[in-house]
Length: 357
Image 1 (tube, rainbow, N blue to C red):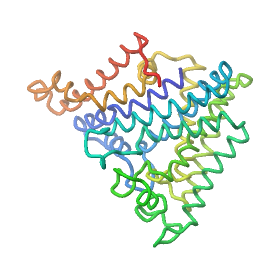
Image 2: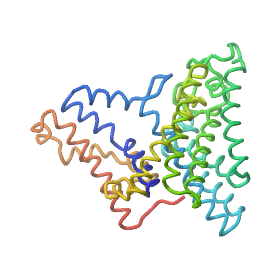
Image 3: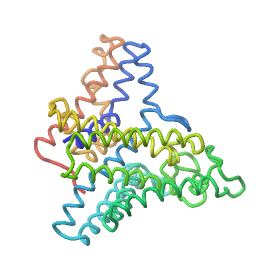
Image 4: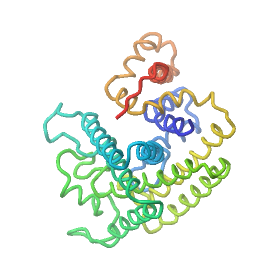
């Protein structure tokens, strides 16, 4: 349940928490809400805000989850069945990503081949296959190799027409590879934050989740030990990432290895806190709405893409009623929008309707 709740917490910030904070700031523009709004903006390039944690934490959670699902598949049906499942799910998720960004609604050149769901699909594919064919040492070696290898390539391989070790936007090797080899639509002009080369450290991000999943699934360790290990490991990873930042900056848009360590470090600590409160202290009632969303993340993610939730909320608390609410009008729309999302998620959960790939 702690994993589902953490996934739901992650989705909460995607489906409308930013609008909630904006509404709070409109109602009471004080320092607290200003700081919250600041943290819910991506950094322009180097650095790290809370908003920059959302995506890598989801990739981390994918890694934790696949340990449970693939272990069961291998035990019951064998490795071949697990590989087929990995390939099938990755392909379906990748196609959903194409659909999410408009599919074939516009010209062929506007199709986005790499995006959020596509990156999750590729991370699941890479980490899943590594999980199936390598043991603990192999998984650690792959993780370290991807992070160190990516650092070596970006630091010491010169960009054609430029220099090696330049991490500025548009001048680094990851952006150059996208410009030269990634066809069709790219999110940032001639390069993409979910680009080709940066997929490699993102797979390592998922593998760190796999290692955490192995720890949580280990029945020989006490739950308190697991929480302690997660907090210590998370702190060490975050510290290592910020230390590495001096030479290899923390940059989400090219998923630098230092960024992966910082994001996974914070993810470990958050997961430890959720595990402590929900699984050990058994304080669960507060987390149930998060579980509703966490059990149906792809459904909810597609819902807010296809349905204008804000427009529906405005029909309920817009017009003269919103004018009457004054500075709280924007907040009312945000709250109603979130309640609609949670209401749909809760309905699906109670009816046991889950989108499975």
